[in-house]
Image (cartoon, rainbow, N blue to C red):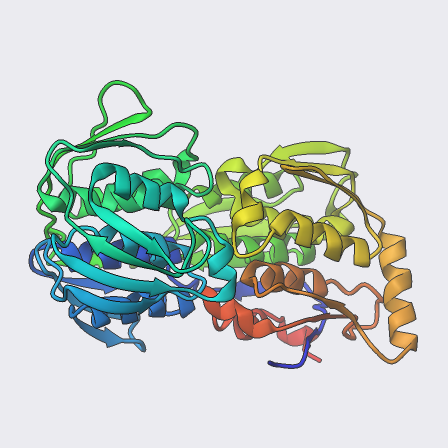
Amino acid sequence: MQDPLPITPFRHPLEAQVTLPGSKSITNRALLLAALAEGTTVLKGALFSRDTELMLEALQTLGFDIKVDRQACAIEVRGGGGQLPKKKAQLKVGNAGTAARFLTAMLALHPDGRYDLDGDPAMRKRPMSGLTDALAALGAAEFIFHGEAGHFPFTMVTKGYPEGAAATVDARASSQILSALLLAGPASGAHLTLTCAGVRPAYVEITQEVRRSFGACTDNPGDDDVFALQPCAYKAPEAGGVYQIEPDVSAASYFLALNLIHGGTLHLPGLGAEPMQGDARFAAVLSYHGLSVEVEAIEDGSRWHVESPGLEGLEGVVSREIDFETFSDTFLTYAAIAPIIGGDVSIVGIEHTRRQETDRIAGMARELAELGQMVQETSGALTIAPNLEELRVRAIRARRAGRLLTVKTYDDHRFAMSFGILGTYDLLGDGKPWLAIHDPACCGKTFPSFFEVLEACRPESGAS
């Protein structure tokens, strides 16, 4: 494991352009559908990270013909027309929730398969029962659990999706459970009915948008909680078989926060007025603090033009409550910079984040408390009372002891990136590091080059 990474503060306004990686959520959805589609699909702007590499490796293990060009961020997939080449395989899903759930639903397409699946220790704790129970209820698979029921590791004995099957789906733990069934089920050639209440809609809508690009009809007449799935022979996208992956808007949140802190100008190419990803709502949260985002047309598409006066130009901030339920991946970005933007904040709608890569509410509460912040944690919310002076005192104390304040990351990329942005603030006024990030390599899950890209944003006049 790497030593903790010191973060050198920025001392001047930004004048930067950041090319964001492709969205993990969209890349893994598109990979699955490209494998199930008829014809050859080329994914452009694809993300290469631990989660997507696990998905690629699993599909190749299953026998799909895939060509990868990492330098061009392109993946060519020869689809199987709804058929899985191999009826037996051993698959490793790491701690990738999308790969774990999407692959499990996909494997159930085989009418006579046997597959062994396992994940990292952290993945073994993450909920799978909503999906495994639904597949069993549909008659598509039986499961042999080799540890705790409803968790990895397990063996699947697959039967295919029966015509006219129906099931009630519990996707409260993760919308990926419903998305997995929406992606894979229609490729079976069967009519299926899924009843699913209480799911967060943002990522389900991403699933539906990607499905439409591969030729699916996603009309959902009647009750919003009932999904009547029609058989679908997925096809390579009409635009010459090319599917363009949207940039990762969750990743954009870190650079929006960077611009908020330091001011100046930031450009994010590839983003338009209506991104598919709900995390775009984070820009509206920061607009409360003076950040502005405009969409500009450029030669090969569009980009976000971002400006802010910087922290010194912000007006006093009063107490507020912000509901992050539909864009919860970004709550960590906001919570991490809360100590320096002022005003009490209550972050609500995040109960489901306790069951992600780690318990994100508990982890964020611990790390902010270690930085001297007053934090109140409930089952689904986090209330933060910033104390900038105490943060400064602790940083000075640590420096006098010959060390830096160090943030734990819990093998969770979002902790590393969020607190990395906090560390760019020149807390002690001398441009020297005061904060370090434990295990920065965990960013490999979605943004392997994050800290290199962050460093490239440093204004030349402020380089140390």
